[in-house]
Image (tube, rainbow, N blue to C red; front, side, top):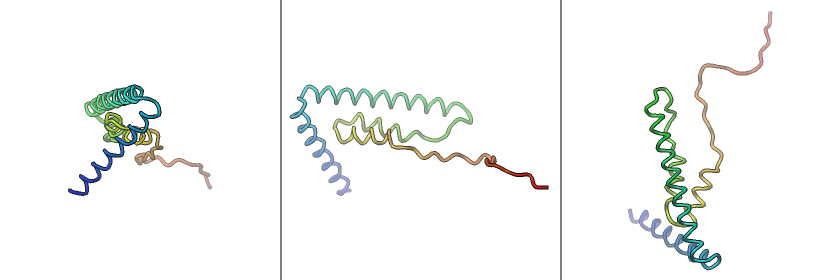
Length: 114
């Protein structure tokens, strides 16, 4: 429990440090506008994914899992800070490995041998 608290405290200190450094370079109002824009984008992403999740839950045979990736990215965008925003963008842009379900179809070339 203490380790988790130290990690959260360290993360918060890093976020504040980078926000102050960024404010020195581009200005305080620009940083505030950036934080508001990223929080709004995160809120819209969460809202969209929640609606999509509800539609998939209430439509039989179309539920293909929980959209955790986009929801986590939305939460990271809502959190104030540059590191969490970069992590959210990387999470959204990282290629996803889709595991197609086995539906009994074997694709490929074949030859008929008589």
